[in-house]
Length: 263
Image 1 (cartoon, rainbow, N blue to C red):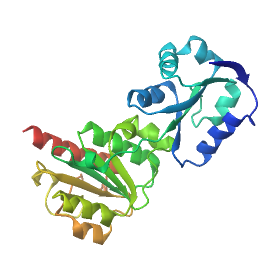
Image 2: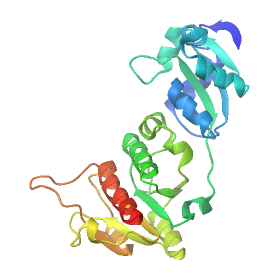
Image 3: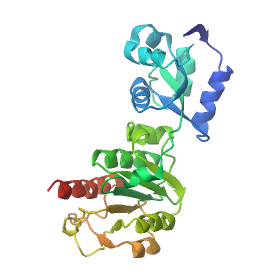
Image 4: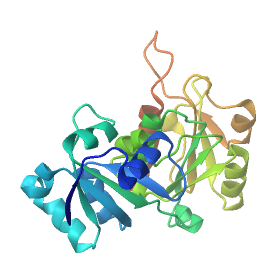
């Protein structure tokens, strides 16, 4: 660990961290907090460098500091106030890191009996992160993030996915039509969530290779996307409720698929 304390907000490391905070992109992502960084390390993510507050480095979280040392990650001491200026939460957790974004082979999405999430145009990063977390929890094999979906490695999406973005194979920056064509070529049936559909979600057969297609809250799925689906299903709701949060809807459908497969 570099014992020199960074106090200046113009320090090169501070500038690199701030740049990723303000505009995510490239092959690096910004991680905040011991828990998320531990998840990244456990998932095989390459952490390039880190900045820790003196409080955390001097015994606040010995486990994460030992894990960083074990991976030979350079850790710089940074003033609490400087770290706080880079944090997106009210109280800084005392640890930031730069890490390389994982890349997933598309073949992994189709391993076993595929259960794939297709998130079309989900631009809210918190919702997208929650979708990935829900998909992994339900045993999904992977995901396609299409039509301008949010960056799964932005801060808000990472907090929502709680590490699932590091592990669940996914592809992004493609159109929904392209994703559906890839699924069709693999013999994967596409089930669209549609509040106006006739069959209930628990009446559909979700035991075989299947993809769950969900659109953005508000706009929903385009007519073209719905038309490409093998079947559209509805989640019955009490009168007066128009729709569910997209992550909740995904949970209902994905866990129904998991239930059917267990049976």
